[in-house]
Image 1 (cartoon, rainbow, N blue to C red):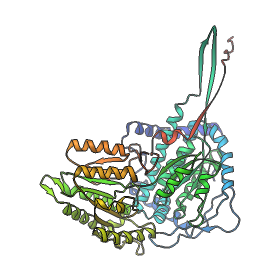
Image 2: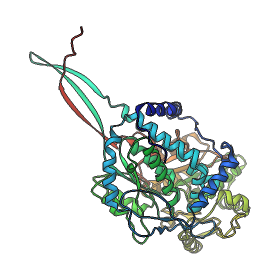
Image 3: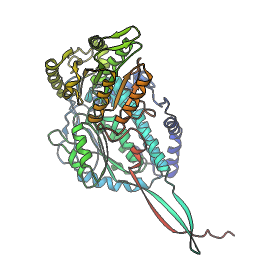
Image 4: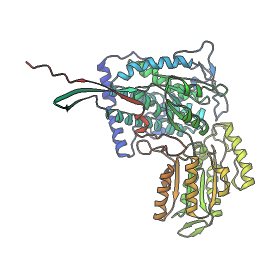
Length: 578
């Protein structure tokens, strides 16, 4: 660990060092334009080849060894391996971790809050910007390999989605936290007449953190949700206990170690950030949520446990993102092939193991209108299946887009849905393994696509996590829109996609999806994945349907993480001047 910096001059230098990037992020959040301080691809990283080699070596150095993480309450005895098995090699990572006593973590976190919450807002922001800088500069490729070999993301997605884009989301959370806190003045002078008396008061306002935040990191994208949640809590003066998924501990352990090192370097208690480990057989989730010292809960994960968290977190403040039935409505298009290519790529992206992946595609049984005439429902479904199949048949392309299947449970789900789909509808695509060009043992599957009628709502009316989609026949375009938005309201939905040429119908769809609380993309084709969420510009989740109660990132995501106290006293006359 580097020598601790305690003096104010060095902290002022730190604030100045990060000022320009932070101000650019503030501008991007105001204007919602495209901006990032980070290169979007690994090849654009400075000294990319050497940096990637160092990152891979750093990742491999963790394998089969204890992970050193000094934190309070560590249990005696040998470290234990987590449930981390690479989806690419299907071999255990063999990294061992020492578990910590939960009560000791909460006690240490409460103590750590004291000096941290008293630090100036700009100092806290600068320290956290330094964390982001260290994660990017020293650990981005190490982190990318850790995410890849625990979640199953491709290397490029691990770098982009779970690396630099997650860092962007972290900065975005800092911007909103700073904005919320700056709205609270430090002091005010107040005067009013009461009868013949003039009462003058000086008032002082203090931002007080809620306390200890528990942050659940999900298995598929462990950093993308965790980093902004951590930044939102820490910027507003709280401490954070991270609870990784047992299958993806290493990315979170690396995260915790970097936070702790930077906090200590600048004279703050590293116990502001700690990690609580559990196993699938002995979960800690409910204990952490209901712990009497839990003040904030950030949860990303399954619908079932997310709903339990929302119902049981009180009196803790609760922020959730779970999942839902992301929908597509196709009414009329200018270029059907372009639409189907874009949909196919998005359906395949990370084998639809993303909370924003489209699942249910609603089309009039009379077909889709095009400039060349109406294309029948069955033909549209077949051509979409062909477009998806073309991606799956190309091993190199599939490895970059489909990547790997994170969990064997997904394979079991595909087998179950294939059987039910064949019995109740028509199988447009049957899943099978594809040969990964780099990892012969990779756990892979091509997508399952099923053609159904709207009466089969019990089959498609929930998120089916993994590479599965349903093409659903509806009475007409209005019925398709009604079915889609009803499902979003009842089952949840984060993203939605519409293809239409009639502006009146588009306007009705915009209104309907707004009421249902899903973020809508209209008539988008081209190389950008339809479900790409841009930091500083796109709001992720609305909080208006069962898919989650919080958004990345708006003011509500940060403002409730602190409270305001005040003191007031009679105004003191200024000292006389000589």
